View 1 (cartoon, rainbow, N blue to C red):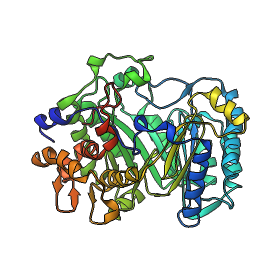
View 2: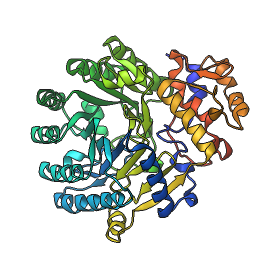
View 3: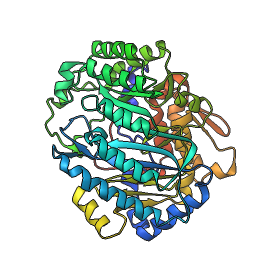
View 4: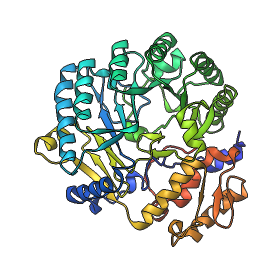
Amino acid sequence: MPNSTLIQKYNVPGPRYTSYPTVPYWNEDSIDENSWKQSIKKSFDESNSSKGISLYLHLPFCESLCTFCACHKYITKRHELETPYIETLLAEWQLYLQQFDKKPLLKELHLGGGTPTFFEVENLELMIKTILKTVDLHRDFEFSFEGHPNNTTKEHLQALYNLGFTRVSYGVQDYSEKIQKAINRKQSFEDVKNVTQWARDIGYTSISHDLIFGLPFQTINDIIDTIKKTKELKPERISFYSYAHVPWIKGVGQRGFKDSDIPNGDAKRKLYEMGKHMLLNLGYIETGMDHFALPTDSLSRAFKDANMHRNFMGYTTNPTQLMIGLGMSAISDSWYSFSQNEKTLKAYQDQIEKGVLPLLKGHLLTEEDLIIRKHILNIMCHFKTSWKNDNMKFKELPETLGRLKELEKDGLVVILDDELIIPENARAFVRNICMAFDLRMVRNKPNTKLFSLTV
């Protein structure tokens, strides 16, 4: 475990870098609907026939509020909202199809939320089948979805498997009843065991469990108990996330805890190090920041082959150039630009009814942005980067390396003539290292709270 002095020194607010520039630093004036359309068409023409595209479908509805969650969601028990929402999402997809002169080659499809399994099986089938009629499938396509252990049924799993889904991710967080009550996310080990086994029996080849460290009231014993139960189920992938305490973004809602109930600093880091130690002993491989996979899983292979990618869906084995997000608040990435849809259900549906893409904001990347983006992707996905080639050099590289001198002195990074390497024992500080490259944040340091703590 990193020593407490280094944790105190570097445990500062910082981005998670699912994009560069990060959303708070987007230049929203740089893009409008027309420039966004031009950007996606350029990316589509460059990459569709070889890499294919990724589709992310944001299904925002949840029946109850989990108070650890900072995602964009819509809390409701009104299932009659399902059909009009799917109709709107499919209409949005038609607006995108109009921008292309050939069928998209679909490499990756992911259902995220919210709670995708809030939706009835028949509605999910209708949505996916309608989309599949409009695309060709890449020979190595991968379909995945996020399932809630409490409402994912055998029928959900079977229907989606029949449509090509082979990966499912279950939000577990922690098995402690006290913690589950505090974050309003109650689910038993038996529920998780059942949905995991159902998926295996049906034929899913990669099952993931999301765990969180740093939750209110969480202790070392809670982590040990959760990992022991995880050992029994042995999912192919583990996302071991740091709890992002950002009440200024998501509010306090219905949470059953106080700020003082949250472990931080050394106490929080010990939770992660215990979990990591146990996962490595179980045979998992560390495949990126807070992510682990069994050696036989495709994520481990992609990490070893330096073919892993990171985008708004997190770590992925599919480095597609174009990722289109459909649905309320969904974010899209053309490589050259980003866009985010309207965040409220009414605004999103109103824009689609008008026949326009529901662009709320976006960012057109500059040449400098694109170079920095490559460096940050390298650091996040491979724990190293290089500027051997001229196309990886940028004007402020000397100043960037200067900002890393303190981390180098502390043994957290190795800087060679034209290469940077993060030692294995320093991976806890990967976000801090990325921040040295983040020229937009360096030039405009935030004077308000934007990000969670890095360590």
